[in-house]
Length: 105
Image (cartoon, rainbow, N blue to C red; front, top):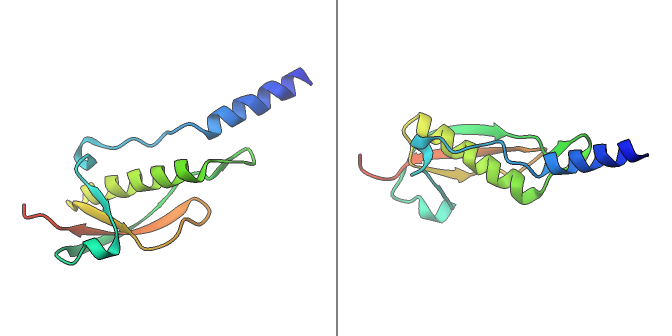
């Protein structure tokens, strides 16, 4: 019984961890809303995903959302975008973003 308690505790702690980090190139990439992109050019789209549960324990919706935004920012930076806009809801740890270039380079 004691081992089971430790396993549950360890799994719960892992479920709250963040593994996704912003790349140096993505630090300046912004997450915007649809009403903020009128002066922007769409340059691509990305589908990003993270684990939404670990060992059947659901992760925090906020944590999953933050990690998806970080991955979208990283993806935008890879194709020289400076902004990303979510175009879908989070479903099973996956979300779709459009990538834009809004600033003059």
